[in-house]
Length: 170
Image 1: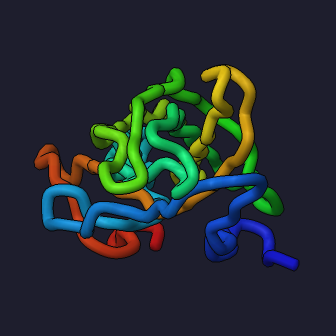
Image 2 (image 1 turned 180 degrees about the vertical axis):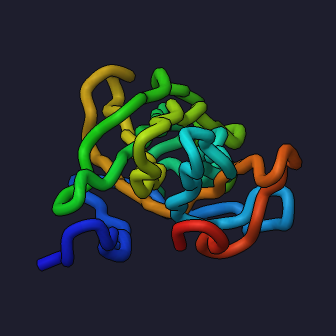
């Protein structure tokens, strides 16, 4: 059970159904992994804004028994309400073809974070992958992953930071 206000670590990646191999591009200084809780208010002024959360492009292949296969990728932002992670914004699905030897050509994605001047709720990005059946529409397998990166503005300077974001609220 999580202590109120302290976000739990992300759950492990999961899969269901028939999927091919999947994973992440290597993290880089430009797109580091991290969950974020950022910002504080002094005398009614909000400092150190969290601007957006995102994910590196996942690397997802078709199942070995398929010549080609459509794979979908969606980003969902979640916020910690003190006890649970709840849904926020979602991107649309990006659907790309893959082969057992060539991954789907996904791109990194990000979503802007709404600022809350009265608090700095913890945020994280959740990624959903879908492997589609031979008809191209029915879902035959899914995967969920949790690595993410963030962009923040601190004292009017915008930056990305590796690991969990530190500083004002941990």
